[in-house]
Each structure stands twice: as C-alpha cells, then as structure tokens.
Length: 100
Image (tube, rainbow, N blue to C red; front, side):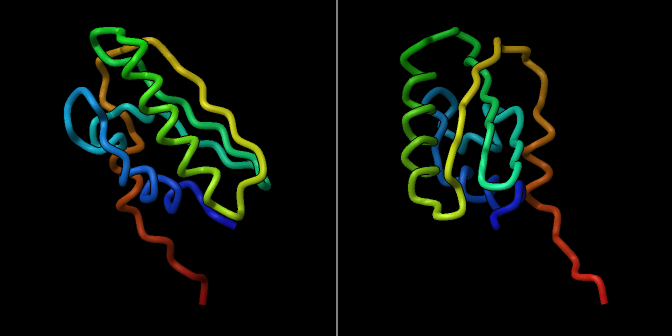
C-alpha cells in the first residue's frame, strides 16, 4: 500500500502552472490523507484565485491517482489561498526506517 510520503513524491512530478515548480514544493498541496485504499488530497488555490489553474492541477492529480493500483477512491478538496508554507514539502524528504 502506498503511504503519504510515497504519494507526495509522485505528486512532485506535477508542475504548478503559476509558479512553475512542482505542486509539492510550491505549497499547492496542503494535505494528503490515506485510509486503506482511499485518498484525500487538499490543494490550495493560487494567489490570483484562478479557477482554470485549480482545474489544471486537479486534472493532473486525477490522472496520476487513476494510475496507482493501490488507490480505489480519491477526493481532491480545494481551500482558499493562505499564503503560508505547506508542511508537505518537507515531509517528502523523510526516510522511512524499518524496525530491526
């Protein structure tokens, strides 16, 4: 089963149309929640509140999620722009250690 860090790495292949960085490093992705085979992703509107940019990001995420076999259901929620940095951008660099 895919975990949040692995999913964040996959999401980092999607470019944010506004700032031309990936959607993880740009802070567009605000949250990732995985429960069993269900995924919920929270994205933030851009500073211009442009619905077209939100749709581009949502469509890219949808295409990516449809190609991950571990995911059966997903939902993408959209929040207003806060201007704050996302914690997701640093979590993708965390390594998972196996218990010995």
